Amino acid sequence: MAKRVHRYDKLDNTAHLFPVITGESMSNVYRVAAVLKEDVDPELLQQALDTVLPYFEVFGVRMRKGLFWHYFETNVKPAPKVKEEHAYPCRYINPYDNNDYQFRLSYYKKRVNLEVFHVLTDGNGALMFLKEIIYQYLRYRYPKLLEEVDDCLVVDTSLDNDDSYLRNYRQSAKKTYKTDPAFVVSGQKMPGYQIGVIHGRIQVEQIKKVAKAYGVTINHYLVGTFVWSVYKSFLQGKLNKPIRVCVPVNLRPYFDSDTTKNFFVIVSAAFTPTKEQYTFEEVLQSVAESLRTQITKENLENLMSYNVSNEMNPLLRAVPLGIKGMAMRIIYKNSARANTTTITNLGVVSVAEPYREYIDEFHAVLSMSRGQHIKGAVCSYGNKLVFTFSSHLYDTTIQKIFFRQLVSDGCEVEIETNGAYYE
Image (tube, rainbow, N blue to C red; front, side, top):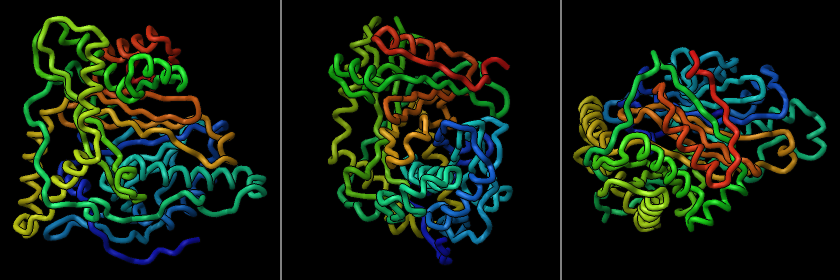
């Protein structure tokens, strides 16, 4: 087993915001989950976590509050206890109830849930950690696997904790973010911190065929269909504010990075109605073009560098954390008004060959944030794509329009909910 070396570490550029704006009502916790072919053995899952955690420095830390910034230090406490899930997903993680860790691992029947406070890493970093936990669990659960694989990390797992934001920063960045108010999806909210989850399972080959017919990517198609669903639900026949979708973009492929820390930027897929009626294809092509023009290495580099430039400013660095926190909360509040929702696509999840037969699917769930009362997450594994809606609104009109559009385009959709809408 790997030994932990006590160390201190800075938060990455994206992470600085999360401790300042997080609380019980806005957790900034997301979930990545793996569904296995058989029910989970909790004792073996705990053993797997205990074995794997020491290898991943990004997860084996506790967060401390400094004079100028929050920072990490090695957490020498035992790994958090694996528990059966009994509450709603993506709840606030109170470190004092979790051995000071900023993640939790739970299970429910065949599903293993890894929930992560975004201060540690993004979805891609979390998936690397989750997959290694699953691999180790499967080796404990099925000892015959050790005849095919070694009892160690797989070769394509990265343990890199490089701050890729700072390594790729350039000084000539310009601000490109929108701050004008976007349309807000509103309605009756569920009580407390309850979240409704709806999974839609689609065959990858089917949705790939549909997207190709429209001349767009799968991601364009899904984001465009979401925007269409909001338009049909609220704005059809009305001239109103733009529908703007935050789309996180994984920067690792663009900058040759394997970091397990956060490394992404946000682009905004925007649709602004200027006439009374639109067809689905008009909305889809507008959204697709919006994304095409933004997802270029030059623009992504500019967005990333602009974000880092504030952290690099020597005057801002010398400001005490308390004052920085107030300023960041104000900036966040203003910028939050500029977006209707967030849709994150974790892409195709690859699994080492000997383990594939034991895993049925991967999916992700996002928590709610200011002004964004419904969100979407996409994950593909094998020939199964899962689009997951999370919302704390009782109204499911957007979800219904979304999946009906997929069905009308030729996709078969299997629906599963967490039951929140029936309580």
